Length: 445
Image (tube, rainbow, N blue to C red; front, side, top):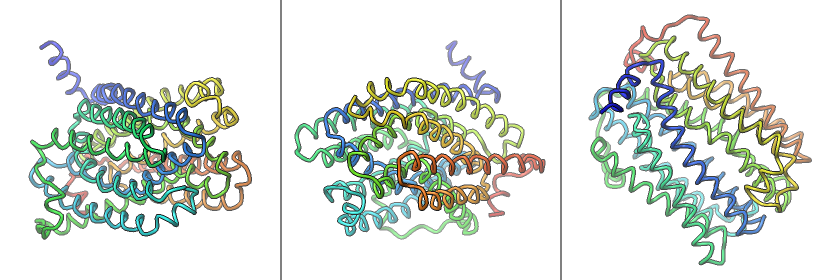
């Protein structure tokens, strides 16, 4: 009773609400991260270095294609956060969900047909794990919509439990299948897929009361015409903008283990993938802050409230992400040996600069999410500039891992500067978004 009164008082105070939700989701995410990164130390000790590099590359491949799902998820959160009508928002989500599922089925078909090409080009020894990545994408469509509905409703405890279910599942099943099967890479990805199915069952059950649609039952049916085609087009344009932005950001922080396979040998790739998996802790341990910011920043809230939320979020990312980056920089060999084993010590010198790359990526993600929440499509420009910089840089400088990482760092720093300038200029214009309703802003799209 006392706790519920305290919760209500905090939840009604905008100054404390963001920090409170961050604390809840951060605690859940910390637990998820612990199980997620237990996955890598365990796998690095039961498979050889080249196989570990393959598993990392396949997970990165999934994350590249999975950007479509993340964009879809952000659209779901934005629709729920800016709508008071559950029935209408549910229809929009269902309409989008069916189309994303069809898109992912098309990707699955492409991956299946081109699995041999992907295998040879990126040094993957078997085609079956590539095909499993396509299956994983399809399963993730309904899992994504329901997870982001929970996020928009700020049911962060339930969302955290779902993440723990997936993290424990992929670890337990991955280890079990590696023990049972001869192909370590196929076994690990199979465990990943089944863990995702279990997680889908959980979030589906938790959102059944507010979202009754079943995408797998309705995808073959004729789409019901929405009441306002103009608003529907607005959602599509907004979704495409998110997709471009997130695709660019994903390339800048997750594509390294894939692109590196074009330039270096299998053993070096395995070591680099191990070090990269440690540095990526910084990104994922701060990802919860961006998730809370996305659900907290709304068009109707106004510039002052939204800017306060952004500043608080940046402070949290700076303290948490910066703290982790600092200890990785001071004691790289200890963390490499502890987390993934002594066979990866040759790459410990790369951990400090990779940690800095991931810290900058975390800040970029936060700045981009803020702009996405406010439906500012100009964010495409800084992200595109970063991709152009990365492409030119890697074309010219890829003879060593140090050069390779340096190009990623320079490109992410460019994006960070441009995104910061964009937000500062928006604030200087003094446009208080509280004067615009969510409907008015959508109509402008």
